[in-house]
Image 1 (tube, rainbow, N blue to C red):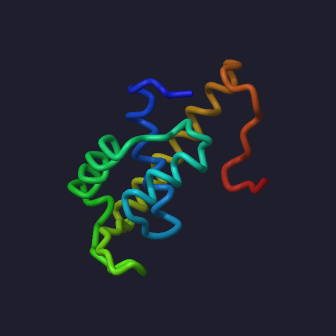
Image 2: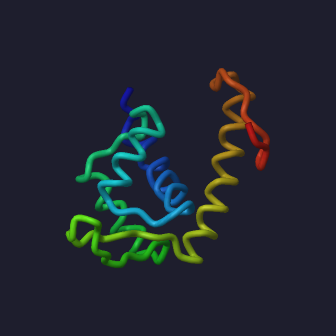
Image 3: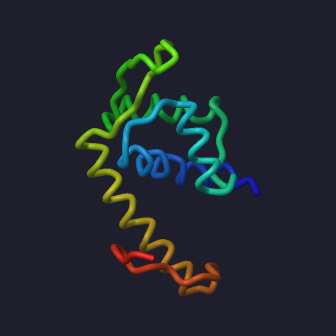
Length: 119
């Protein structure tokens, strides 16, 4: 199921920042991981992802560096900056509050884990 553009606009940055909080990744790897881990819900093409990455980089949330891959090809890897970590923390808190409010209204059908709780 594809998510409407307006919802993706808000979900895309936090999704990318969350993935990059675990480790640095290159663009195509981000595309594939987003699609796989969200069962296609947050799937985005490279034409959507790269402008998002450039925007996050311009805002100082991520930074990029070139590394040679195992196949000898150069790839641009992205990683979270200190500013990006702060932004991710703030955005995560906001998403948790929003999700809690939507659950209170009956919009969400499954209970949410408390912040910091593990499944």
